Image (tube, rainbow, N blue to C red; front, side):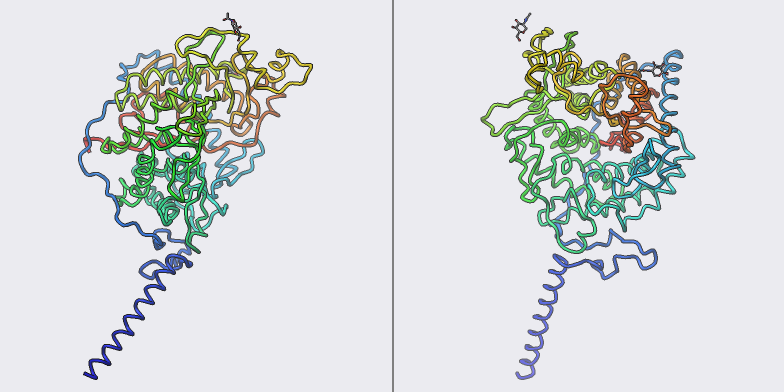
Length: 597
Ligand SMILES: *[C@@H]1O[C@H](CO)[C@@H](O)[C@H](O)[C@H]1NC(C)=O
Ligand SMILES: *[C@@H]1O[C@H](CO)[C@@H](O)[C@H](O)[C@H]1NC(C)=O
């Protein structure tokens, strides 16, 4: 008995110690600094001195991980137009244009290579360099697939070698933007792998994925979108109360493709949790079908705010619904519903027809303020360069989900972007502007009085100036009531939509529209080294003015997106067919899951 009692005491003390120890280790994993992996390996590799993100222990593990579907996907409706064989004359015209695009790309690439190698961006006027995205060579990684597509293979392999040296042990910014890092770096690496098949690119993509998924290690597994990666190792973290809906809602394609390629479903599972929240709350917002621009990630409440738009800060959330459908091979019905219900609402409340002197039958997507489901939806007829992506999205949705009406919406949205490019003196559209809205979508006669009244309402004026003075001072083309941001920052969305619509419809006029956009942009943004953002696209075209009009900035999307789409529209349609690939929101083509696999 005594013997047993003593044993029982030992056993009891032992269990207590174990429980305490487990509790201690548990709370350390929850709150304290992380220096070792779950199995005790140091997070800093003793040989390379690099941080091994893949070993970082999870503080808030998920209950179960959702696997990717292994069911053979159905054949989806074909996306690309069935182009007839090209005639010699057509091909020759395309070649000349394509070459001009490639020459522009090569100049800019050389500028980056010589003046900013391994930095995030080259400064196109001064020739210095910037780190704007963590110092992980954003332009380099973002350009890999464009180099491949343009056939610049020597440059591609040189860039791959450099890419492999990127070190995620440090960052030039304390806080990184998880969305930008995902679409530019992770998306760029995945596309470069999908095109070249070089597995070193996939393992670099996995390194980024292993870092980025730590941003999801919060109590409710909602990610932190403006994230301090190294602070996350020191103490536990939680998601923010106000995040931009596009930043949390468009991580899904890149995370899903990484899971498809590695066979590890943890990334797909991480973003699928967000998608389910969007689906659950789709009809609980103030404008049912859509979600407001900011949402509460900490409480996973996506319903509170009152501002609804397809434009900046929301855009790619919506763009990714049809694209995820394509990427997954249509095996999850949730994306059709997310797309159909949100676009039904956007069509009803956000799209408007602007009044133009030539009575053009075009559409622009504006923004709506709505404070409750019962209140009226007030439409602000604001257009943005950024929202030009919407034409391409409606076209893709029309094809994939077989909704013919969405193709005519797509065409009017794309024509709206082409129209606004042509309406400005340089042939380039501004960042943000307002137009006078038609009362009817069906017929709309130009009425100069109505336009001028709108101009008067939207622009402050001194007591002596007439409406004509306001129009002159603000350099407003007829139909525009206000231009609130006059820049053009080398953005891709207009040519993106023109390209996508061309590949889906084969309409020839889109080629000339694209060429007009390209000549205007390349002429007016060109610097000695590369191409630069413009401060004011409403200023007339004189050389002195144009030099002062340039900003010392060339974002990586100029090489990743704008010039890639220009190149592809002038290429043979079989190059990156939309039936084989789907582009992420940074124009990185990811291979679609097809029934033949
Ligand atoms: C143009 O609009 C004004 C007021 O906005 C209206 O009084 C006038 O009748 C309109 N003209 C035509 C031809 O419809
Ligand atoms: C661009 O420059 C070329 C050659 O200098 C010229 O032919 C063309 O008209 C210009 N395009 C525009 C839109 O100004």
